[in-house]
Image (cartoon, rainbow, N blue to C red):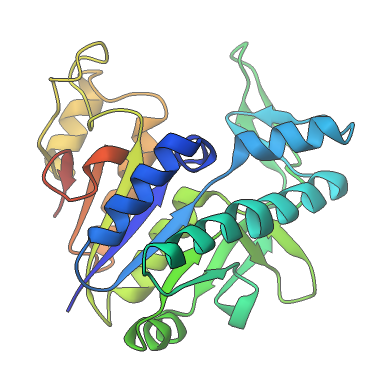
Length: 265
């Protein structure tokens, strides 16, 4: 049975017009499905309203104890439950989840990590309460899905010792897709602001239709693929190696799977 796992960035779910269009399109996807969302801009705004400063290093949020409370409220509460309520209005029996719910995704606190800074130097960074995933319970998720439930997963996990952990939404999506691969024929779709992986970053019509391991190496070597797109495609290739049928990188208005860049073995 085919299952579609959709990951959407915070910008899409935090703006009224794009959120409503996304959920309308998502509700039209046939068969079982899972939605993973972000919410970083809302977390940054609410933290500022509370007098809590946001610190980003290498595109990742440093999550101290105060920021952990904010992201838990925003990701697991405000953003997640808004999406669930809207999906119910679309006739989708959605269930909002963090990794702590039903012990569905267990992580460990990220150790000190060497990070390349904007000035080119490297330094060891403590990201705080940020989680690196150890396991995802695909059997538990499959049980829910087979009962007609649509999981809506927030980018939060837990350590099994009582602490929540802020976890990258792309990682949540990849680990969820891999864990469900033994149970379903899984397509994982990463939705972002471009039409796919582009040969020319200034030309939305230059989408690369298909990437596999061999062509990926060539695209990195010649500089076509660079920066943050490299780990995104590396994660996609790891997912297909782990049994996910295909990964599609596309724009949020194309979650019908007809457009974008397909990544397969």
